[in-house]
Length: 370
Image 1 (cartoon, rainbow, N blue to C red):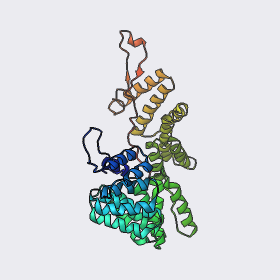
Image 2: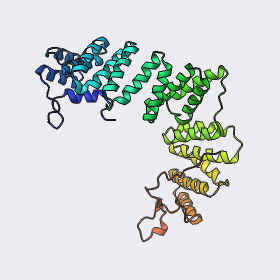
Image 3: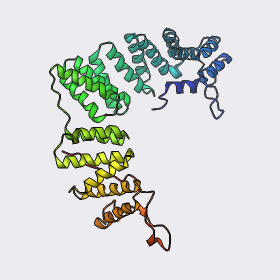
Image 4: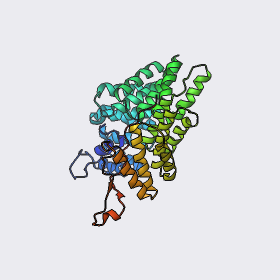
């Protein structure tokens, strides 16, 4: 979103000169120019004092309001930004949004909603519409209007499906449903958060809420094997290898299904490799090679075993493993990748082949177990 940082936009307007030396906005008064310099340097107190010396105007009050926001002087911010919203339309949407924020910090939820309503009506295409709609949902929720909060959160998620604010909106939509007498629907939403967002700070909160709902008699289905596999794979993709290993182990410690165990062990071995536990990874990949895993997965296991052998300093064994992969499945994608090279030498047959730098993570998609 354009200018999502309120501070960034405020600075662009407050600075009279851009980085290239061109005029961005001609400040009408020397005191305001001085105030903009202080604001740029994050000296908000001096910025306020300088702006107070300028004649009253929309831009003066906008600077004063923004300085008050930074200084957490909420009542002063409300007053100045209200005037700026009416007299400095160039940034009227920012004035109204920040005024709503100041109201919110004073727990004046109806007043905050009034400012947000005006902003969204007068500036429907504002670059900060996302932030305004999200704040509107939060204000409705904080004020106990769960029906309208749920509608706002639902509309927000449909409009902005990605982002931390969308996940928070999803979480709070579940709490709204609980407050509105539909705990089963709330539980369904809360249950989806640990599955799809296992690394989020909201996952522990959602888990605690599920435990609380279970104590009231709401049936909470335990996570299936495929859902846990999804959890672990997401953590793996995010680089949370220790958490991924713990997630895969939670199934391996209880499962007796050979097919499920192989897939979980393979992903665990990959996580061990990625977290540089090469000896443990080699041990697990070596064990998996001996299992009948099917052609595609067997190719992957042998490829990763070769990589792990190279990491453990066993270059001859690694080259042999690569060559065996190429000889056994010559048309396989992994077998045809240039993952090793011979040194340029007339006597190269006497010198071992070394893994090429292009040998990276060529792991293909591993389907979730049923």
